[in-house]
Length: 530
Image (cartoon, rainbow, N blue to C red; front, side, top):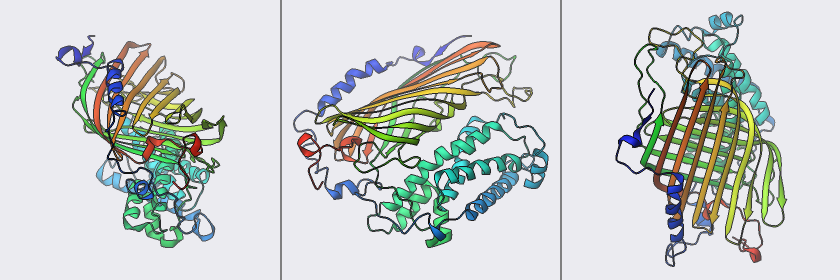
């Protein structure tokens, strides 16, 4: 089978991370040229801190009480989950597939005696829509005043109920993981961000726009606040975390890929080569919540620290979602210049760079920290390693159901136990430049898999540089690359690679590019009162 390389057939410049390095260094030098950014407004005034982002109030104001007495309910979220699943079943029955979404009572009667399987639904359905459905369950319970672990029980139960009664098909193990566990890991950051938005109004009254924004982030939270008024009008206490947000709007200016994968679904037909949409625009949201080093902030509740990343693109809708949250751990310090946290993290990943995909749910041990290298230069980073369950790759005809005449009914990705690792570093040069590097490695093994004798190894890495040009507005140059190697005993090995160089506008949500400063003023820290 031939290997296709789009870069080999078009007269375009191929850029790699090494090619990008001189460009990044050159742009970084701009930050230190006298006069660049000289007209910036002061970065540390209270007005400047609060104006650019909805999450940057200096000290979030408590809004009523939350999760106490009558403001907490175990019954209401249970009723809401039952109602949500019934409505979803009826909508799917009339507008999607009446045979798959039969009546809940008939589905339950049929499925109680059936064996749980690994299904072959579409990748986005299994690995994004099911986690989002679980996030709704988590949101119903959390916004009714329940704790993270109490809400997790509701999410697991809601997912199991949907598998037994929501669909006529056999209950699915992978869906239970995706909705019941991934839903918690996706739903908690959404609930926390919606709560922080409501809490950051500054005067104790969230206001209409903050209510609408919170409902868009966590619809279940918005519904409970609307339906029950002051009973669930209290807002979850954030305890004033250090928060950094950034929004990136960009476009690819150079893309290259290679693939030897046959995408023809007809097993006896001629090979068909993959294609790639090259010119794409994208929007990214990155959030760091509870960054280490803020004096007085503690890590006593799950997700008191988390990082959340979301990217949408014109070529692939939802291209990636990453949620990493500290489930159980504590903070630590090394000398005067380093602050960190370590412990057990829960992680949910969804990556789909057009020509292949990977998504996992995992538990990882790791650490996140910040080190002041000098008075104005800081290094931030996270290192995680763990194991989970997930799916990925591009497997031709790997489903559990017999194939149709054209290969339909086949799942084109591989499930299995998935060891994985993450290394993320950010070098911050003053309040002008940050250089970010991230590498993620996923190995989807043949354990707990329906495709025996096979594995997937998928690596995603990127390097980017952000130059803050004026106030909180900046430019970002980025190179991203994803690689996949699939090996199976009953088919040829497959290899794919896609790389993209992009440039875009960045809106920063905090001055100083996300650093946390606990140092006294004499060592480079903030002046008293700022």
